[in-house]
Image 1 (spheres, one colour):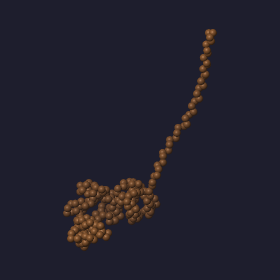
Image 2 (cartoon, helix red, strand yellow; image 1 turned 45 degrees about the horizontal axis):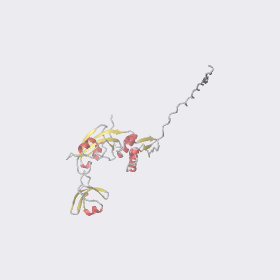
Image 3 (tube, one colour; image 1 turned 90 degrees about the vertical axis):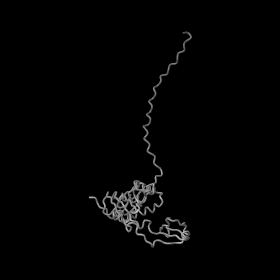
Image 4 (tube, one colour; image 1 turned 120 degrees about the vertical axis):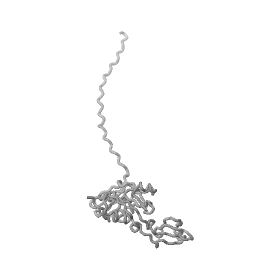
Length: 264
């Protein structure tokens, strides 16, 4: 009997989220759906790694996944409180345009800006004032969701490989070589990932996830191998030394032609 998904499980999940009122596709793991909806093309669309209970998905999707089986698919409606929250009027603020200018921000309606570590959308500009909305862009929306558990990841090596791939999707997961030995995970960073910006943060994130969700691993080592010069292939053993040439037959010296005698 297939096991039911529970908190702490590593799942590869396909999902699509739409706005209930407009039908607009807001998020998806499907390339086909993304292309039809005109979403970004520079994103890797594939089943997403989810550690159930880690808060990597909105609450409504996580609750739907719990108790599902591998291969099971579900349609659901997600209210705002289990999606991106209700709109909070107190998060809409009015600031002076010159205050933004001092921060190097040119106020334009619809622009997403960062103010004191918080993100906001500029809703209105006029009379020297700017209205900033610090609510989540999808706050207040009811969503329609489709979710499927593509695979339950059980092998420890595969769990670590999926953790790496979720943070470095542009590098094929097969390139990460992972060795497990007595509670230690040795991870070989492939050449394709060594120069990526933010690699130290990726490593720390992977270590934290392993610490929290893979209790059988006590130590993590990251290694990099550089091949400076490839060894030349061994030369084939030369054939036996050329056999000595057989001694040339002694030539029988020709007799000197006898001169004809003048008397003859």
